[in-house]
Length: 424
Image 1 (tube, rainbow, N blue to C red):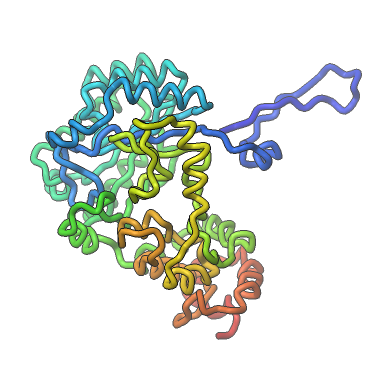
Image 2 (tube, helix red, strand yellow):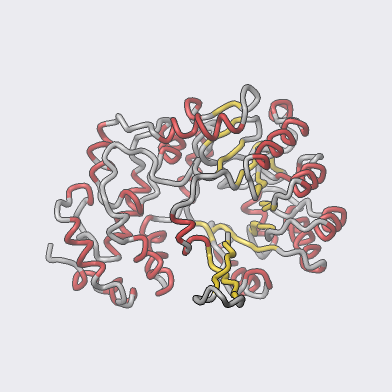
């Protein structure tokens, strides 16, 4: 978001004035903004025409029970209208594969007529000439986000487990390219497609709307959001990258490292105590699942933390219900003694959503997440090779020492982190 405002010449009699463009995050106005509802993520369906080996949500595209439970066209329109009336500026449309909904075009047009920008997440297999024509006539105003599972048929369909998906996806991508419909791409790093990652990055570099940015290739995969398939959970765990492989990303380039340093400032380092939510979930937006449940984020589907919009209003859910959820405190002693005492908590991905998908509750520590965070902190020279952050007592001094080396080349720290931290 960008604020536009006018700065007038110092002399009151002068009429000259200038327009300054400034990012909202850098403006004093933004620092004192009231919370307002500016985005809504809508999961149109959990069904998908692929069957990806790592997917946390997908159901069969013809799942009759899911179809029966999904919100109707009118119910979704009513929710979008209420969101717009609350000041919503953008709707993120996801799934499953959202284009499976036969009413997608109708819902898309409705959202755009409300003035909402639309971000579509898709596998591109169902992109056809009619949709391309629609996107040309009524642009979404946000680049479509396409997930690429491989550059070759064997690698792509090794991930999707669906014959013909490779040809369908690349046909859709070519339609977007030929018609100059703005889109960006991302991928997943899996054993089936690792050989393709270099060629994927090279191809993505030629997409105009990537603006020279390297595409994301996800290595961490969440478990089933509905906790409905423990056999698949075992497979997902096997597909995850090792904690050291994920932590390596934080010090691989200087740009990434400098961003990490800003996050690793003293303002963010502190133990969480009993606080559960340190994220922005439910602040300035929220997530709507395919069946009408409004929640803080895509992960947290614990039955005690969702609001049924079929029985109430979006305003009530956002202004009253979600703030109550965000105030919940941890009661699990394992969390209080470990996460609650850890000064890395605000840079850690541990959250109630992660606890939910891993353990079925809100406050059981997730060992995998903890290992990633600790490995990253060791790579950055903040803690020793055998230390647990929740046992560190001089953490404030360590942060001061760390901040004093803010311009050190990350490669040097990664090679020998001991010279950039206090003696153990």
